[in-house]
Length: 393
Image 1 (cartoon, one colour):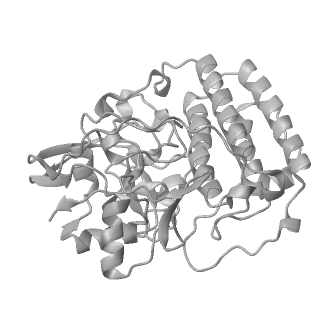
Image 2 (tube, helix red, strand yellow):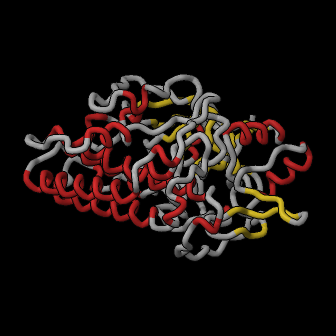
Image 3 (cartoon, helix red, strand yellow):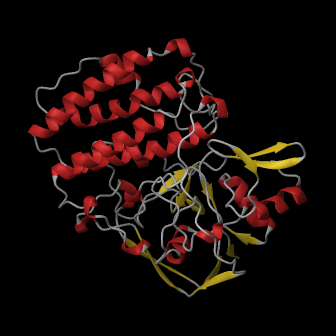
């Protein structure tokens, strides 16, 4: 159940050996992900606001190196230019797009050599020394977050730039039940307590309760079919995952284009979700409303199970098959304290320009399905695996 997801490997009792194993598994996950991109496409930029793919090839190891190196006396920088070049990504806010060219980046072989050296040095250091568990959790989850970010980036590559990978089977959808679900007035518990000793990112603390009146929420995520009705009535722009071909609508999957599956959740930006909600005479849920409605939810289509969604009725709860937008601006909880080793992770985005998403997608790792986890994006960013459901006004 969603409210019971606290994996043993998230807590302080996890051993260093267990966390090293999880780090190795996360590396394997991202290595496999890069393998689906044809070598000639590694210098492409599938999303204009983001770095070229080649940046991320170096970024994952650089992040680990910059985070963990100081915990291992005797480790000295061996390529400081790369340590800086691959250090920071781009938050796609504002109108300025990156203007670098492929020739501005190092050769792939050189980056691979740099990555191998980092892994050798860090692995030897982790075997020999105790590193704070919190830092290892950060390294693991940072990499797994990028496994999802890279997936939606690669989703935007032309199909001929990718090598097809296995797609899990689609669960048999249940009969569709109509209407909304009534949620009684009460309280939602947000965040987690630092006293509990579980790992969380700084924006997940501190735990607190929020009261709310009764409300109703859609039983299922809004589907492509429902959104198509809105689009046709309002002559709105189509979602980035759709494509018009030969007079019909198609879904741009990771490895193929298929006739638009009307019973799959629609993936849209926050602005698009909000426009639909207004048209339907409803609203997006607040973070506390969503949290309360998700209590007891069974995750479905998560943890790299598939590359694409499944019908909304194949997942019984709110967790999985696509993140869900809320109407809550991303901000600190009472008692927030930034990570001293990563002060800008959350605080840089408490700017009134990002909205909270909850739940998870098919490409979200299991460790980040904990109820306190928060994701966030700006309202007009359309590339994320994010859908929505509405609440009654």
